[in-house]
Length: 282
Image (cartoon, rainbow, N blue to C red; front, side, top):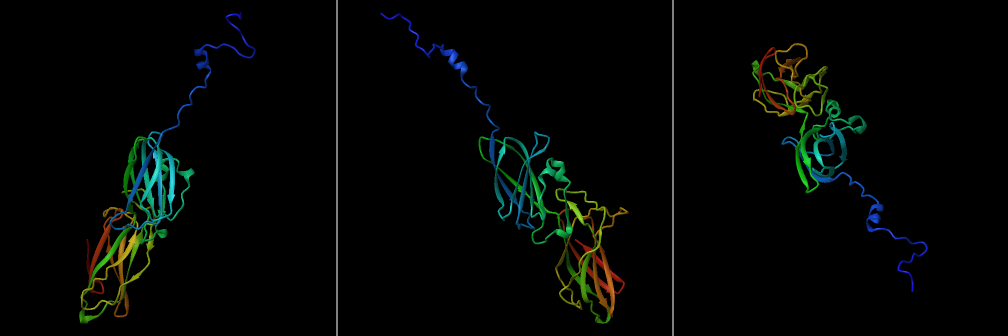
Protein backbone atom coordinates (compact mmCIF):
# COMPACT_ATOMS: atom_id res chain seq x y z
CA UNK A 1 0.00 0.00 0.00
CA UNK A 2 1.31 3.43 -0.89
CA UNK A 3 1.13 6.10 1.71
CA UNK A 4 -1.78 8.47 1.43
CA UNK A 5 0.50 11.34 0.43
CA UNK A 6 3.37 10.88 -1.99
CA UNK A 7 5.74 13.70 -2.96
CA UNK A 8 7.41 13.35 -6.36
CA UNK A 9 10.76 15.05 -7.08
CA UNK A 10 10.47 18.48 -8.80
CA UNK A 11 6.84 19.02 -7.90
CA UNK A 12 5.22 20.80 -5.03
CA UNK A 13 1.80 21.49 -3.80
CA UNK A 14 0.70 25.13 -3.99
CA UNK A 15 -2.57 26.51 -2.69
CA UNK A 16 -4.85 27.97 -5.38
CA UNK A 17 -4.82 31.44 -3.85
CA UNK A 18 -1.02 31.40 -3.78
CA UNK A 19 -0.90 30.69 -7.55
CA UNK A 20 -3.10 33.67 -8.23
CA UNK A 21 -0.86 35.91 -6.19
CA UNK A 22 2.13 34.97 -8.33
CA UNK A 23 0.51 36.08 -11.65
CA UNK A 24 1.81 39.32 -13.23
CA UNK A 25 -0.28 42.38 -12.36
CA UNK A 26 -2.35 43.97 -15.13
CA UNK A 27 -0.64 46.83 -16.96
CA UNK A 28 -2.43 50.18 -16.79
CA UNK A 29 -4.27 50.98 -20.01
CA UNK A 30 -2.82 53.74 -22.22
CA UNK A 31 -4.69 56.99 -22.82
CA UNK A 32 -7.92 56.43 -24.68
CA UNK A 33 -8.35 58.12 -28.04
CA UNK A 34 -11.24 59.28 -30.15
CA UNK A 35 -11.69 60.12 -33.81
CA UNK A 36 -12.39 63.72 -34.79
CA UNK A 37 -13.55 64.71 -38.28
CA UNK A 38 -12.48 68.30 -39.02
CA UNK A 39 -14.44 70.14 -41.71
CA UNK A 40 -12.62 73.33 -42.78
CA UNK A 41 -15.03 75.85 -44.30
CA UNK A 42 -13.67 78.73 -46.38
CA UNK A 43 -15.25 82.17 -46.30
CA UNK A 44 -17.77 83.27 -48.92
CA UNK A 45 -15.06 85.48 -50.41
CA UNK A 46 -12.38 82.80 -50.67
CA UNK A 47 -12.76 79.04 -50.76
CA UNK A 48 -9.48 78.12 -52.47
CA UNK A 49 -7.44 75.65 -50.39
CA UNK A 50 -3.97 74.47 -51.38
CA UNK A 51 -2.63 73.56 -47.94
CA UNK A 52 -4.05 73.07 -44.45
CA UNK A 53 -2.21 73.04 -41.12
CA UNK A 54 -4.16 71.72 -38.13
CA UNK A 55 -2.90 72.39 -34.60
CA UNK A 56 -4.50 70.64 -31.63
CA UNK A 57 -3.89 72.06 -28.15
CA UNK A 58 -5.02 70.31 -24.97
CA UNK A 59 -6.99 72.68 -22.76
CA UNK A 60 -6.42 70.40 -19.75
CA UNK A 61 -2.62 70.44 -20.13
CA UNK A 62 -1.71 74.14 -19.89
CA UNK A 63 -2.71 74.54 -23.54
CA UNK A 64 0.18 72.38 -24.73
CA UNK A 65 0.46 71.25 -28.35
CA UNK A 66 -0.83 67.69 -28.75
CA UNK A 67 -0.37 67.27 -32.50
CA UNK A 68 0.28 69.25 -35.67
CA UNK A 69 -0.70 67.86 -39.06
CA UNK A 70 0.00 69.41 -42.48
CA UNK A 71 -2.09 68.44 -45.52
CA UNK A 72 -0.70 69.59 -48.89
CA UNK A 73 -3.90 69.16 -50.85
CA UNK A 74 -7.18 70.88 -51.61
CA UNK A 75 -9.32 68.70 -49.34
CA UNK A 76 -11.43 70.47 -46.75
CA UNK A 77 -12.16 67.42 -44.56
CA UNK A 78 -9.53 65.69 -42.41
CA UNK A 79 -9.65 62.99 -39.75
CA UNK A 80 -7.56 63.07 -36.57
CA UNK A 81 -7.10 60.51 -33.79
CA UNK A 82 -6.86 62.48 -30.54
CA UNK A 83 -6.56 61.73 -26.86
CA UNK A 84 -9.79 62.20 -24.97
CA UNK A 85 -10.40 65.53 -23.28
CA UNK A 86 -11.03 69.18 -24.07
CA UNK A 87 -9.23 70.49 -27.14
CA UNK A 88 -8.70 73.73 -29.06
CA UNK A 89 -8.22 73.08 -32.80
CA UNK A 90 -6.59 75.77 -34.94
CA UNK A 91 -6.80 75.64 -38.74
CA UNK A 92 -4.36 77.71 -40.83
CA UNK A 93 -5.02 77.47 -44.55
CA UNK A 94 -2.67 78.39 -47.43
CA UNK A 95 0.28 79.27 -45.25
CA UNK A 96 3.30 80.33 -47.34
CA UNK A 97 5.55 79.12 -44.52
CA UNK A 98 6.43 75.89 -42.78
CA UNK A 99 5.94 75.79 -39.02
CA UNK A 100 8.48 74.96 -36.31
CA UNK A 101 6.59 72.68 -33.91
CA UNK A 102 9.20 73.06 -31.17
CA UNK A 103 8.60 76.81 -31.07
CA UNK A 104 4.81 76.35 -30.96
CA UNK A 105 4.49 74.13 -27.91
CA UNK A 106 2.00 76.51 -26.29
CA UNK A 107 -1.10 78.11 -27.78
CA UNK A 108 0.11 81.61 -26.93
CA UNK A 109 3.17 80.99 -29.11
CA UNK A 110 1.00 80.29 -32.15
CA UNK A 111 -1.04 83.41 -31.40
CA UNK A 112 2.10 85.52 -31.88
CA UNK A 113 2.98 84.14 -35.34
CA UNK A 114 2.97 86.93 -37.94
CA UNK A 115 2.47 86.67 -41.69
CA UNK A 116 4.00 89.11 -44.18
CA UNK A 117 1.78 90.92 -46.68
CA UNK A 118 4.43 90.59 -49.41
CA UNK A 119 4.12 86.78 -49.21
CA UNK A 120 0.34 86.74 -49.68
CA UNK A 121 -1.55 85.43 -52.70
CA UNK A 122 -4.95 87.07 -53.41
CA UNK A 123 -6.06 83.94 -55.30
CA UNK A 124 -5.24 81.64 -52.36
CA UNK A 125 -4.97 83.93 -49.32
CA UNK A 126 -3.78 82.79 -45.91
CA UNK A 127 -6.80 82.07 -43.70
CA UNK A 128 -7.34 80.89 -40.15
CA UNK A 129 -10.06 79.79 -37.75
CA UNK A 130 -10.50 77.80 -34.57
CA UNK A 131 -12.95 75.70 -32.61
CA UNK A 132 -13.22 73.91 -29.27
CA UNK A 133 -14.59 70.47 -28.52
CA UNK A 134 -14.42 67.55 -26.09
CA UNK A 135 -12.97 64.35 -27.55
CA UNK A 136 -14.73 61.16 -26.51
CA UNK A 137 -13.46 57.64 -27.25
CA UNK A 138 -17.03 56.36 -27.49
CA UNK A 139 -18.02 57.77 -30.87
CA UNK A 140 -16.69 59.86 -33.74
CA UNK A 141 -16.86 63.62 -33.20
CA UNK A 142 -17.19 66.21 -35.96
CA UNK A 143 -16.25 69.88 -35.83
CA UNK A 144 -16.65 72.61 -38.43
CA UNK A 145 -14.05 75.39 -38.49
CA UNK A 146 -14.76 78.54 -40.50
CA UNK A 147 -11.59 80.21 -41.77
CA UNK A 148 -11.29 83.82 -42.94
CA UNK A 149 -8.43 85.63 -44.72
CA UNK A 150 -6.38 88.44 -43.27
CA UNK A 151 -6.48 90.28 -46.60
CA UNK A 152 -8.77 93.26 -47.07
CA UNK A 153 -10.15 94.08 -50.51
CA UNK A 154 -10.44 97.69 -51.78
CA UNK A 155 -12.28 98.18 -55.08
CA UNK A 156 -12.59 101.29 -57.22
CA UNK A 157 -16.21 100.83 -58.17
CA UNK A 158 -16.92 104.13 -59.93
CA UNK A 159 -15.04 107.08 -61.39
CA UNK A 160 -16.52 110.21 -62.96
CA UNK A 161 -14.90 113.08 -64.85
CA UNK A 162 -16.39 116.60 -64.69
CA UNK A 163 -13.44 118.48 -66.18
CA UNK A 164 -14.33 121.43 -68.40
CA UNK A 165 -13.96 121.16 -72.17
CA UNK A 166 -14.26 117.38 -71.99
CA UNK A 167 -10.63 116.84 -70.94
CA UNK A 168 -9.86 113.22 -70.18
CA UNK A 169 -8.20 111.61 -67.17
CA UNK A 170 -5.35 110.02 -69.09
CA UNK A 171 -3.47 106.87 -68.18
CA UNK A 172 -5.37 106.45 -64.88
CA UNK A 173 -4.03 104.06 -62.23
CA UNK A 174 -4.62 103.43 -58.55
CA UNK A 175 -2.48 102.28 -55.64
CA UNK A 176 -2.62 102.03 -51.85
CA UNK A 177 -0.55 104.12 -49.48
CA UNK A 178 0.46 103.43 -45.84
CA UNK A 179 0.15 99.67 -46.04
CA UNK A 180 0.36 97.42 -43.01
CA UNK A 181 3.30 95.06 -43.81
CA UNK A 182 2.54 92.26 -41.32
CA UNK A 183 -0.14 90.87 -39.02
CA UNK A 184 -0.78 88.00 -36.60
CA UNK A 185 -2.54 85.24 -38.50
CA UNK A 186 -4.85 84.41 -35.58
CA UNK A 187 -5.71 87.99 -34.59
CA UNK A 188 -9.37 88.93 -35.03
CA UNK A 189 -9.28 92.65 -34.19
CA UNK A 190 -7.13 95.45 -32.83
CA UNK A 191 -4.76 95.74 -35.81
CA UNK A 192 -2.39 98.64 -35.08
CA UNK A 193 0.60 98.73 -37.47
CA UNK A 194 3.92 99.60 -35.83
CA UNK A 195 5.38 100.36 -39.26
CA UNK A 196 4.05 100.85 -42.77
CA UNK A 197 4.89 100.49 -46.45
CA UNK A 198 4.65 103.92 -48.04
CA UNK A 199 3.24 102.85 -51.40
CA UNK A 200 1.93 99.67 -52.98
CA UNK A 201 2.06 98.63 -56.60
CA UNK A 202 0.14 100.65 -59.13
CA UNK A 203 -2.74 99.01 -61.02
CA UNK A 204 -3.86 100.62 -64.32
CA UNK A 205 -7.53 101.23 -65.01
CA UNK A 206 -8.97 99.70 -68.21
CA UNK A 207 -8.95 102.98 -70.17
CA UNK A 208 -8.89 106.77 -69.98
CA UNK A 209 -11.86 108.42 -68.26
CA UNK A 210 -13.85 110.82 -70.44
CA UNK A 211 -17.36 112.17 -70.35
CA UNK A 212 -19.11 108.97 -69.23
CA UNK A 213 -18.89 107.52 -65.74
CA UNK A 214 -16.87 104.32 -65.66
CA UNK A 215 -17.12 101.27 -63.40
CA UNK A 216 -13.63 99.73 -63.56
CA UNK A 217 -14.01 97.35 -60.58
CA UNK A 218 -10.21 97.41 -60.17
CA UNK A 219 -9.32 95.74 -56.87
CA UNK A 220 -6.35 96.20 -54.55
CA UNK A 221 -5.46 94.20 -51.44
CA UNK A 222 -3.94 95.06 -48.08
CA UNK A 223 -3.61 93.84 -44.51
CA UNK A 224 -6.04 95.24 -41.92
CA UNK A 225 -5.31 98.61 -40.34
CA UNK A 226 -7.75 99.62 -37.61
CA UNK A 227 -6.13 102.92 -36.66
CA UNK A 228 -9.01 105.15 -35.48
CA UNK A 229 -9.91 108.12 -37.62
CA UNK A 230 -9.02 110.65 -34.92
CA UNK A 231 -5.75 109.02 -33.79
CA UNK A 232 -2.41 110.67 -34.47
CA UNK A 233 0.79 108.75 -35.11
CA UNK A 234 0.07 105.60 -37.09
CA UNK A 235 -1.31 106.65 -40.51
CA UNK A 236 -4.45 105.16 -41.97
CA UNK A 237 -4.38 103.28 -45.26
CA UNK A 238 -5.29 105.41 -48.30
CA UNK A 239 -6.31 104.76 -51.90
CA UNK A 240 -4.72 107.09 -54.48
CA UNK A 241 -5.97 107.80 -57.99
CA UNK A 242 -3.14 109.00 -60.23
CA UNK A 243 -3.50 110.27 -63.79
CA UNK A 244 -2.42 112.92 -66.26
CA UNK A 245 -4.54 116.01 -66.79
CA UNK A 246 -3.38 118.40 -69.49
CA UNK A 247 0.02 116.65 -69.52
CA UNK A 248 0.51 117.08 -65.78
CA UNK A 249 0.46 114.21 -63.27
CA UNK A 250 -2.20 114.61 -60.58
CA UNK A 251 -3.07 112.57 -57.51
CA UNK A 252 -6.42 112.28 -55.72
CA UNK A 253 -6.25 110.72 -52.27
CA UNK A 254 -9.05 108.79 -50.58
CA UNK A 255 -8.61 108.28 -46.85
CA UNK A 256 -10.05 104.87 -45.99
CA UNK A 257 -11.90 104.12 -42.75
CA UNK A 258 -10.44 101.64 -40.22
CA UNK A 259 -10.03 98.32 -42.01
CA UNK A 260 -10.86 95.19 -40.03
CA UNK A 261 -9.78 91.69 -40.85
CA UNK A 262 -11.07 90.42 -44.21
CA UNK A 263 -13.15 93.55 -44.84
CA UNK A 264 -14.34 94.74 -48.25
CA UNK A 265 -14.65 98.42 -49.19
CA UNK A 266 -15.74 100.09 -52.43
CA UNK A 267 -14.79 103.62 -53.52
CA UNK A 268 -16.40 106.11 -55.88
CA UNK A 269 -14.44 109.19 -57.07
CA UNK A 270 -15.57 112.27 -58.97
CA UNK A 271 -12.92 114.62 -60.40
CA UNK A 272 -14.18 118.20 -60.94
CA UNK A 273 -10.88 119.95 -61.64
CA UNK A 274 -7.16 119.33 -61.26
CA UNK A 275 -7.34 120.13 -57.53
CA UNK A 276 -11.02 119.54 -56.87
CA UNK A 277 -12.63 116.16 -56.33
CA UNK A 278 -14.99 114.27 -54.07
CA UNK A 279 -15.32 110.64 -53.03
CA UNK A 280 -17.36 108.19 -51.04
CA UNK A 281 -16.42 104.90 -49.37
CA UNK A 282 -19.04 102.21 -48.90
